[in-house]
Length: 118
Image 1 (cartoon, rainbow, N blue to C red):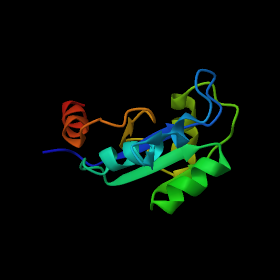
Image 2: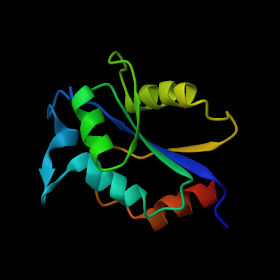
Image 3: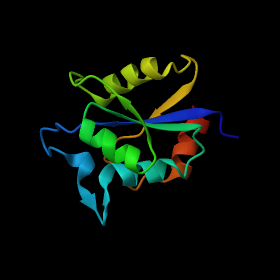
Image 4: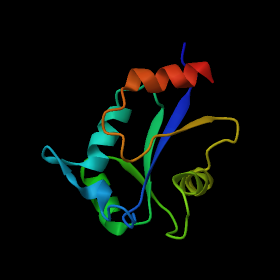
């Protein structure tokens, strides 16, 4: 049985390699929506997009995602998730999965298996 867990998807607009990547169109939907939809196939109790960009925030809200606006100075997605955990007041003993914002084909079953292993 999979223990309760939350997913946070870090998404920043200012990528050095591909600016605006979370908003790039993937077969008619933004990349961030594809990732969110994969997360929805898991057993996660909650799924949150953590972003520093108002454009990503608006797009994520438009498809029904819970969104947390974070600072733009973070050097990594892990740092962004740490801030989101504080802002969302997630219990320190709870499992939080970092689902990368550029993983649009991550099966929910695999996410559940990782949590079960933890």
